[in-house]
Image (cartoon, rainbow, N blue to C red; front, side):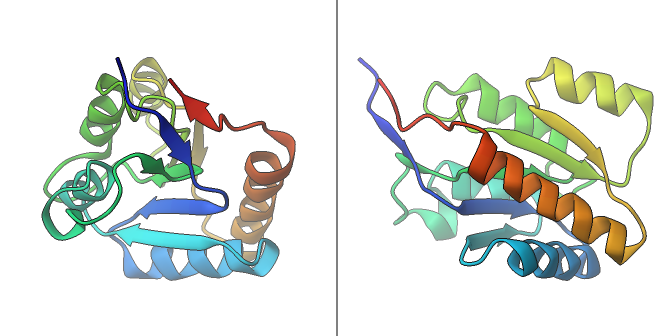
Length: 153
């Protein structure tokens, strides 16, 4: 029998290796959706450690999951698509919404992201005002409109 997992309200895992994009994302999200708890993983291996409570995150409760994951694709160590594949292959984590937020507009990345179970695919805008609008829409949808599961048995 599977252990029960909990979705932690207003908790986001941001997987982003670009420091500028990290700061812009955090600023845009906090501008529209305070208070939120944002954990940043700067490469795919760190993201997997966080999600599966390993390495530096070994003391984290593996059954407490983020509200959603914002996942870049072009990451060092482990690619975003491989992170997504691992998330979807584990019974405990497959329910976590994953939003791909990347600069890639390659059709192959879009198709592969959705085929691996991404809930959404968003190309990062270059302009901060546009980026801020997208962050606002993300927060409204994922925190106010969408119904997240409370428990998965």
